[in-house]
Image (cartoon, rainbow, N blue to C red):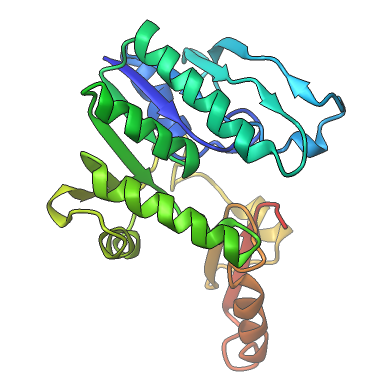
Length: 257
């Protein structure tokens, strides 16, 4: 099967997330995968040019070395205030190009703006469109006005998607409340690769390093640390209960804001 995926984060510098594991596994099964990403970290790049040309990177992998993902990076203007207008123009052009040249049998969206564009072009060309939700994306924007605009695009995409996939019950409720059709909204929980995570592996060295006793109950968070994620509040509340619940520990792994 030919699968086109669109997202608004850097495929190489961020993750691996659900989409990396899923698409790389599908590529190992013989499916053809093309990904359109967005270099949203361009402000941190050493190269300070105002315009980046379109790039095509073949044989990209993050999880499985044998995976074969073709990564498409549309041209972009690196000018504050114009980056989203640039995204609309160049990403729409790239999606249309892939529909014509690659002829995807399904398009999968993980973002907001380019996912909306992909949904519209998929509908226009009779291609099934899947919206895959792994987060409440509008809340990731810094200002209320941008969050409001993001919600509008997200609602339109949810209402028009052939299928909506979510990774937990709360996201399912959220998607349906935002306009997703209940009968077309599916819960697919994040899995565990038992070849990588073995419960019988001796973890004593790591436990000793982080002062985790054998009978401790560990709350574990792994991922990007957003200001609004609530981890600070959880940590402060846990600190207040340390005298009564000294066996309760919080372990946070990640980087972020």
